[in-house]
Amino acid sequence: MGVTSNTCYNASCQQSHMTKIMARLPRYYIKNQPQHIIQRGLDQQNIFFDDVDYQYYLDCLYAAAYNNDLKIHAYVLMPNQVNLLASPREDKSISKTLQSLGRNYVQHFNDNYDAHGTLWEGRYRATVLDPSEYLLSCSRFIETSPVRSGLAKNPKAYQWSSYAHNALGKADEGITEHRIYKQLGKTDKERSQAYRDLFKTQLTAEELNTISDATNKGWALGNAKFIKKIEQITDRRASPLPKGRPKKTMI
Image 1: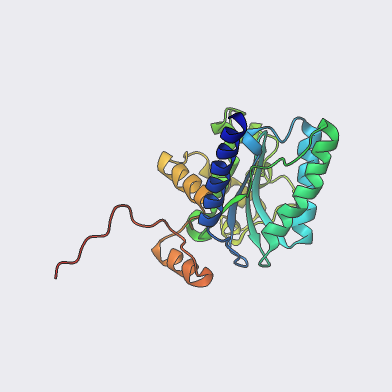
Image 2 (image 1 turned 90 degrees about the vertical axis):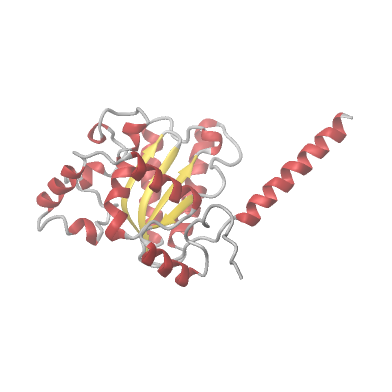
């Protein structure tokens, strides 16, 4: 009886898993269009335990991004997840970068912690965004994540993010400043100050939910015109279907 029960359970799980796979929307592969990317540890487990881990991952990230022509604008590394804001220069820049990271960092992790198997929670989550509307908001979303998670009192107090470069002007060879960021001022000092000033106002709950929901579900971040453009380019839905049943047409 136990074997039969387990078999039925496993078959049910497998069917559910296959349904989820079939329901997945294809990735966005659009050159030079910024994307917000989230990669989480399996079952929310930690993927970093000390500074050596963080630094090794960051080194691997920068090397892989350089080799695959991925421009990183913002990032945060937290104990159980990574958030990136990046623009692919080639169709597969993001996927190739994360595949390289998977090979190199997972090997480091397994060797150091006597671990086996996968480290990540399935596929990475990502959304394409309209930089004129969402690039700076998404950058702030990423760099304030440690504050919302209780890891730091403010973004400046957290070491493993791009805040030191974007807001404080610290040199970081792995960061490529997006044109929207560059429009904040004529000099590095002006841009850093203007960017830092943005943090005087917190992102609203609605803004946080919009960015989080779009990234986790793969919906484009932008206005109706931008979303329509993305749907035409990718030939896929870029926003959720309207809720409720469609109204019947009276004849």
